[in-house]
Image (tube, rainbow over all chains, first blue to last red; front, top):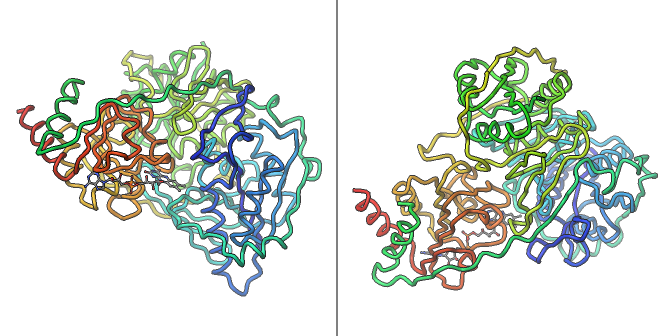
Length: 263
Length: 315
Ligand SMILES: Cc1cc2nc3c(=O)[nH]c(=O)nc-3n(C[C@H](O)[C@H](O)[C@H](O)COP(=O)(O)OP(=O)(O)OC[C@H]3O[C@@H](n4cnc5c(N)ncnc54)[C@H](O)[C@@H]3O)c2cc1C
């Protein structure tokens, strides 16, 4: 079984994230890392492999990003993925989800014979949550997304999806696109052994021409939507803080809510 | 005037409020045309009409019902082909965004997700990076496909023609590859829907697992109940109530965080609330940086006392 895990390199969410003057995300000024939500996808891929002991299962970590994004692929290798691919090309910079999904789809086709494409539920920067659905559309594969639980037997997959109004069980046959939520199970930390082993694992960098994707369709100028303006929201200023003493807190709270006409 | 397609979000024919908000926004861009995929559309049609739908495309769901997302994207793609609309609006639920994503690829159109405002010229406003930035954007290619967050507009009544047109969509076999094998509807709590509520009262690890003070206080204000991931992970409350990066985003008039420290991932789901209040034992909890009003104290005593006082005042 061939598993491809899509991993994104994102600016650290706990740092002060900003935009460049062309309104693209500043990826230089803020330290980057493997999107936390993709760690859950790596974890589920590893569990899938562990459950299929004796079967030939290979996990490829696939990333589209700048050269520095190699770090995200490396982290996936340290966690236990078998090999890594980074698609890096100047023409990709500034691409939106439409463009990114085109590159990912091209890379998956170039890898060939992929049974499961595993994704996280969203990136921690753009947070659009649409790339897995777009990949399924582009590759004409079944989409089983936002799984809080994954079960499989042979090429049959079943996931639990906790929707807005109901919890559903979705079933499909591989090859398929699967995305997992942060409810699917905590991701493991790389072990010392894993970190050492990752140094010897193959990590290739591909350009767009390597995978046969047309550069003209990609990048900021070819994006199908355009950002006109980005503006920092003024920080919220702290209001009144009271310390509760013998019921004074509740009284002050109710007083505040009444003054704002919430009562 | 071109039509603006609005995909109707409904449960067994009962239209959910965010769809009415979309109809209100759609009027700015053209003639609102609702797309109802389901059985027994009568009640829905009446309501959609009341909120300004000039047209309602009714699509029988016999062929879409048992499958995930893909068939609905096909229905919309066929309607886009037929009507060349000025835009397609979809509610920003998990499913809505996935439908929109597939539709964008199918129709070669740009996509904007999680808009909180749409101007007359189609410029959208989004809130990004955990609510710390505001982004204005516009679709430049194809038919603008925009998903809009709940609570982004106030639904305005305004009788539309509500002309019903049955639309027979063709669903491909390929769209039926992900089957819904079982479905368990969520039990209603009787409280307002989290993303639609004017007031949200939430509890975190500081509740110690007892949500009674939270629920009592919420009910005294007619509020929805929410939670932090720590409370969800501890099994105290289902995931559907989680607020934050990997839960729901809420933007109510009033948000009251109790026993919640205010981690960045939690802020991502509530930072754009109009008024923020917190009750927390720790006067250094980061949540206090955001609040309009804060009480340093034990939620187990502050909330029941406040609930009693509110109930008394309401008499
Ligand atoms: C990938 C990822 C995604 C995440 N997504 C989300 C998300 O969507 N939503 C989310 O909420 N979190 C999310 N988190 C988790 C987040 O980082 C925090 O761990 C979580 O929000 C903490 O929850 P808490 O504030 O309830 O708990 P804590 O941080 O433990 O805070 C508990 C607070 O309760 C106070 N307290 C204790 N007892 C009392 C009392 N008796 N009365 C009053 N106050 C009391 C304490 O002073 C403390 O401030 C995510 C994390 C990751 C890594």
